[in-house]
Image (cartoon, rainbow, N blue to C red; front, side, top):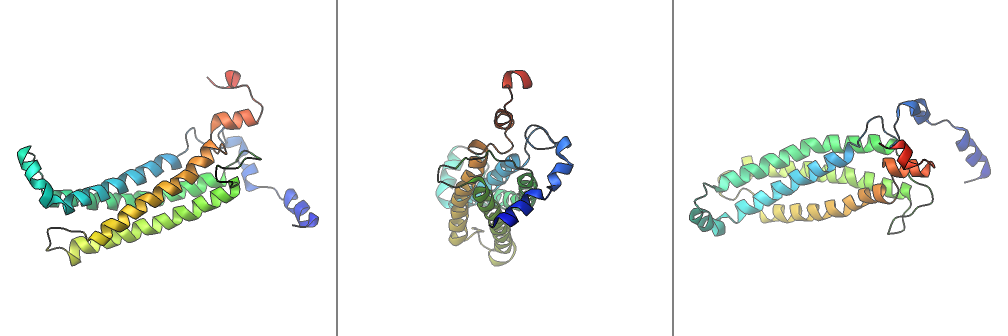
Length: 211
């Protein structure tokens, strides 16, 4: 970038400056970041949904154990849990991604820091944002696929889901783990929305400013 353009960009006032007096030490207008909590909600719902569909798929091998333990478990019950958890995951994930973009816009990463894989903060945030949208689309596609299997294609089968569906669900869980590492580095390495890190970067004494 030429010096002329660099000087131009430094003179542009950020819209964040208009609400800076409403932000706390974690650079948010509220105490705790919302996105990380919704992320774990999304992951948990998806993981439970896939796990229970696996349990329903392998029910013929498990039913003797359930009978021995006198557990009133049915195959359709496993698949019901799988379907409703995936449906809830699909709905909550829109709020997860929305909260992520909002909090990313307010992010102030620590300067001069790189992640364990050598990325700077901006690259990490961009990859995390793109990955989040991609995962949202995958989850929605899986929900539509799951719905067609439940209500159309496999409605007369005991096993509501195909093996390909279960394999894709397992792959998405792995991708969620990799993608989640980017978000974890934003907090642990770059101090994004971490109150203590931001206060230390500002030269504050934590013993004085924190209760």
